[in-house]
Image (cartoon, rainbow, N blue to C red; front, side, top):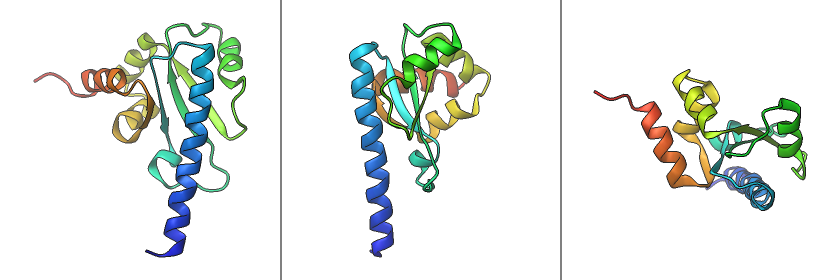
Length: 129
C-alpha cells in the first residue's frame, strides 16, 4: 500500500482518537446518550483545515444556545467542533431531513451510545411500508 495512504489513515485515526478523548471527558460532566463523528473526518476526505465534527446527544443540554455552546466547547481541543442535540431535537432534525443528521445515519463514526443512536436513526430514516 502506498505510504501516503497509510499516513492518511493514521491521521484519520489520530483525529478520531482526539474525538474519543473529548467524548470521554465530556461524559464526566454531562450524561450522554450518544456521540459520533460526522463530516470530512468520518468520510476520510478531510484536509489540514478540517474540524472534527462531533454530534453529541444528551438529555440535559441547556436550551440557551450560548450556554449549550459553552458547555460543549469547554475542554474541547481546538480542532473539535461539537454540535449538541437532545433526543427530541435529534428526532425532529431527522424528520426535517437535516443534512448533518442524515450523514450521521449514513457515515457517522460512533463513539458512544451506538446501539441507542443506531436504533433512533433506523426508526427515523427507514419509513414504514
